[in-house]
View (tube, rainbow, N blue to C red):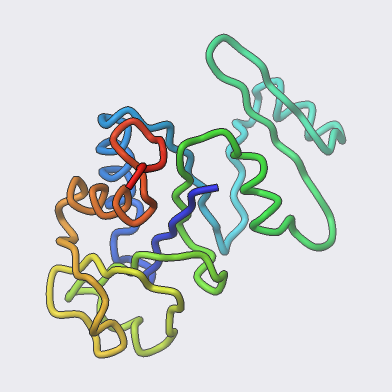
Length: 174
């Protein structure tokens, strides 16, 4: 499974960069999935819709199947599923981009924005293979390849090269 993460302190622009990288990878013909790790409770279900009403009535799992789209909402108690369990649900894509899971050992691209530099001293990131930055990165990131933070197409090029993918998503033969 080809996976690469994006990590940075809050407010750095991870989601904005990922949106551009996803579009660039899709334009190259790749099937892309994204796994976002959140630190706060979130609920994508809309109050008043059938799926929300089912959950409010006590269903712990609801799967909606419609034309061109399906989604599942699964509530749980106890320990949350592991990153590996979530990734298994996304198998079948050419690659999976991860936002968050900073402490997991998968390879990551760190983001450094000069206007959001404060968080770097508070939390070290591990397994960084590149840094997308708009200014010289902190000392902890010296020595890794630097990518232009505001050029998602170039970041996508790095992802393809790093994961050994060609433009159509298959492994390079080199």
